[in-house]
Length: 121
Image 1: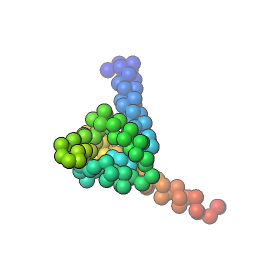
Image 2: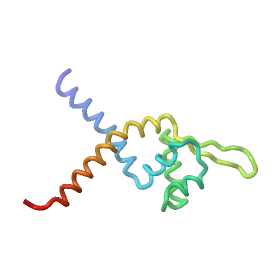
Image 3: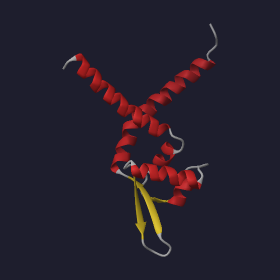
Image 4: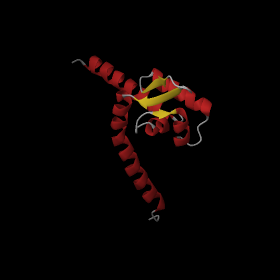
């Protein structure tokens, strides 16, 4: 493979990774995904699980995650109507892929804190 092709392929991969980071960096997105890992939840269950999120923002993020194929929305015709949100396999795969980064972040944070509290030489 020529260098130009390798660079183009690398840039494509980096763009994909950046898209994931941008998504996860959005306020409440990670909290919502984590809250859903145990399965389908009703809106108010998400609201209780994600402390501080407003109803408006929760609706916005759930719709966004649904449009990206990370959350499925199921309407159960009953009285009153029940709506459930659940992570898709795509979201579960994403959360598994992120776990090594979470571990790295915890390790790095512990090292940084230890370094910050170490006596100066």
